[in-house]
Image 1 (cartoon, helix red, strand yellow):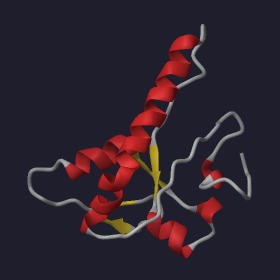
Image 2: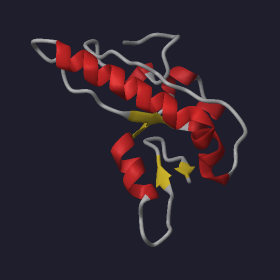
Image 3: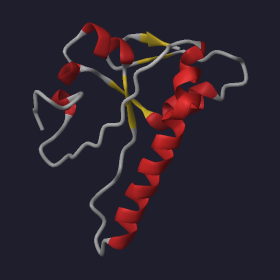
Image 4: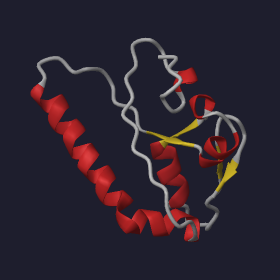
Length: 112
């Protein structure tokens, strides 16, 4: 769990496994350029593969948690101490009707 090569490994337990999907590209418009540039398609493919894997097993491998690694933590700190955000919570934040799309990671970085 405590791997120098794994993103956010400091918060993992020994029984956890992590599949990391990452994107790097032109920033702007709240990440929309990366998202519409194919990142969404990659995430959908990974989601399909995970669901297929789980459905083919007699016993589930455990709960699958979806997290987003804080991009500020990745930029400012060593990658294995980067903090994460709950995927569903981030999606809920982006769907707010009041237009406020900011959230903080576990370290306190303000993200939009």
